[in-house]
Amino acid sequence: MRRFAAALPFALLATLAVPAYAGSITIEGHGEVLAAPDMAQINSGVTTQGATAREALDANSAAMAELIAELKASGIEARDIQTSGFSVNPNYVYSDERDANGYSLPPKINGYQVANTVTVTVRALDTLGAILDKSVTIGANTVNGVTFSVADPSALYDEARKAAFADARTKAELYATAAGGTLEEINSISESQSFNSPQPVAMYSMRAEAAADVPVEGGELAFAINVNVQWELETGAK
Image (cartoon, rainbow, N blue to C red; front, side):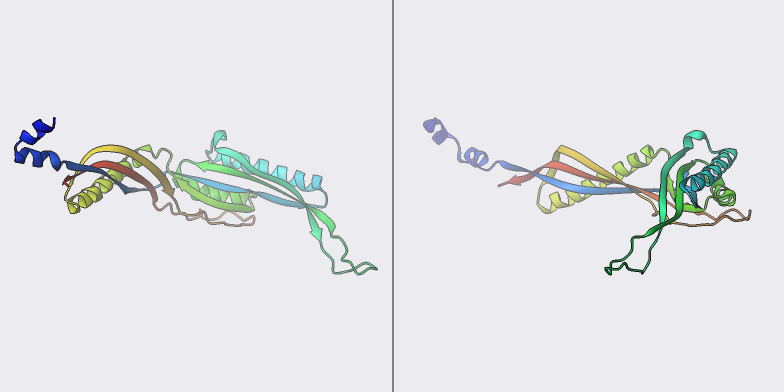
C-alpha cells in the first residue's frame, strides 16, 4: 500500500488529503397567524348569603336554576354549560375584645355564603352581549371573565408551521452562506406551539334591569409555532 500511495500523482494525493467538511447547523424559526375568534367562554354565577347554610343554599339553588334556564332559552345547549365552582363558607366576624388573659377572642360565625359558578360556551359570538346582559338581569351577580377562542385552530397552526419553517430556512441559509457552505439534508425537526389571547378581565355585576346588550369586542388571537430544524452543513475544503 505504501508503494501504491507513493506512486499516485501529486494532484490526486492533494484531492484525497483535503475532503469537504460536513457539520451541522440548528436554527429556530417562528411563525404566527392572527385570526378573529369564533367562540367565547363566560365564567359566571350566583353568590348568596343566609343566616344558615341551608338558607343560603336554597336561595342560591333557586337563582342558579333560573340562570341556567335562561341560558338554555337563549340558545345555549346543555353540553355548553358546565359547573366550574361550588362552595359553602361561613361568614366570620372578628372582634377586638380580649379575654381575661389578654388573648384575642375567636371569631364568631355570622351567617353563611354559597357560591355557584358555571362556565358557558357561546358559539354564536353575535349573541354574547345579549347573553351577558340577560345573565345579570336574571341574577348572576358574579362574572369572572370572558375568554375568546377558535373552535378548530388546526388550519391556523398549519399556516404558522409553514411560516416557522420558512423563517428557520431563511436564517439557516444566511448562516451557511456566511460560513462559505451550503445546507444539505435535514437531520431533525421539532416544534412547540402557543396560543396568545387577551387575558380575561374580571367583571362583577349586581342584579340589574334589562338594558342594552353588553358591548363586547373579540379582537384577534395569535396562533404561533416555534420550530427547531437541524441541517447537515457542507462547508467545503478544510
